[in-house]
Image 1 (cartoon, rainbow, N blue to C red):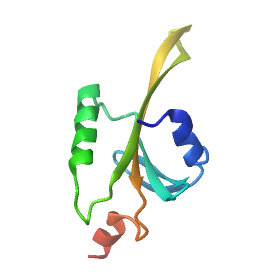
Image 2 (tube, rainbow, N blue to C red):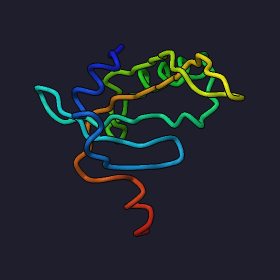
Image 3 (cartoon, one colour):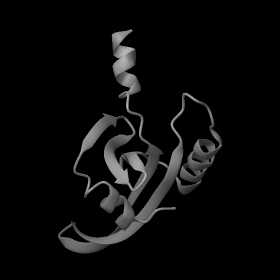
Length: 115
């Protein structure tokens, strides 16, 4: 598991977006031994904790030359004050990230559009 601080650091505060889709936005990140792709899962996804854990377990087990490898994940929840019905309330702000090895040849989407 990676901390939110580490995710923010390796993506340089989410400075370089390299992809976008229905499940979230992908940012370029850098580790000492190479580049990574960090997917920030959409907060609009209504994914329960069990579904998230199941997804991680599936990605960990997926091993194939045509599948990028999952390197880590982050599940971070922080309290945030928000105005609701004229009053401030404390709400949980949940953020989830998946960190993959970086594939240099672009996104699958660009290959599918060309087909």
